Amino acid sequence: MNFICITTPQLCAVDGLISRLDGSLWCLAEIRIRSNHSNKYTTYLLSSKKHKNIIDMSIRLKVPALLIVKFTDCVMATTLRDGYLTSSGGRLDRNDIQDIELCAYIPMSEFRLVL
Image (cartoon, rainbow, N blue to C red; front, side, top):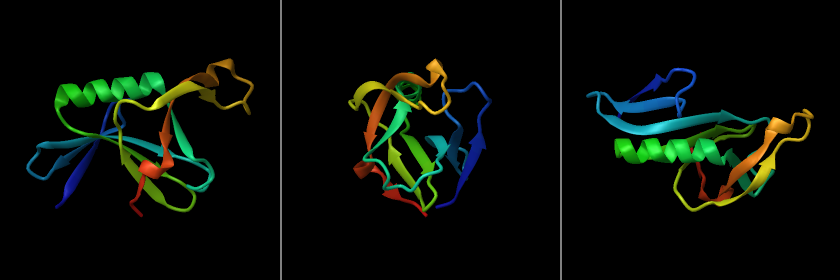
């Protein structure tokens, strides 16, 4: 099956819309690039606010939402769902207080190899 990925505007809840060749929407796509190997951490952190916005949009449009991550060693994807553990998280290396927020902790065991 062939698909088309349509990039969304900058402030949209997701990075892209993936549709079938007939134009019907297949799924939402949040695409990330990380500078670490896929096995470095046991969970993947995604802003809880971003997660909620993606899930809400997925429910409204009645299509799944994929999180696709390009790591240094591979590309992996998972279908986002409700119910992840949430806790404060983020990065500390930039000394920016806004880099710490409530995050959804997505188990890496839920990701599948794409490339």
